[in-house]
Length: 227
Image (cartoon, rainbow, N blue to C red; front, top):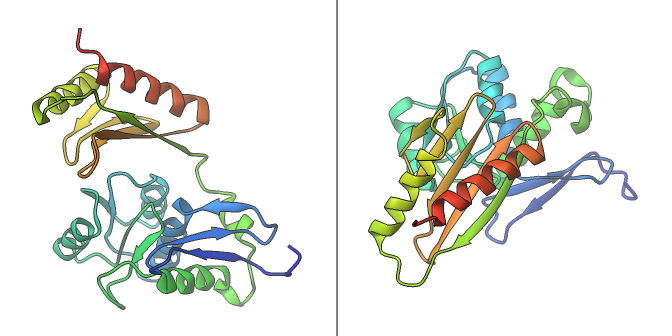
């Protein structure tokens, strides 16, 4: 606020991901980056969008508002790009603040994200505060944790643990696109093994924080329960 800026941008060291802050100085994080960029693109060029399966459903909701399909890919920039090419997507990205605009290049680019968000704020010739743009977004909360796997667990043990997670939510839809993703009517959960560490990352999104934490706790217990 002291600088009088309308928005704050935060890049990672190699400038492929972007997080944002409002004019009031509130840190809004990186999940909103792709959603706002998608809103900017779809307002003018409705078309397919691709996000990875660990990304907030905000982009899905915004795509639906514009009458555009939104497809999930496995985690990883290359997987998003492959799916974009299959679908002839107008935009793609990940919830880590990575935005991919095929008009510029098939890579994540924080400068592209900045341009699209500024374009959205300036739509109609007058500056709309970021807080006004997001006030009509669905109230969704993402929570994340990681589970350190017991020593000596094999790949089969991890696979069995994912099946236990799926079985713990019998009323939900299950996807094995990447790890195990549990889809509810009002949220989702993803359990995915790290490729470099003996851990499983669990992400959940729901209408409120308590619901997301509750789902994570239930999944975590199922994952480690070998009884």
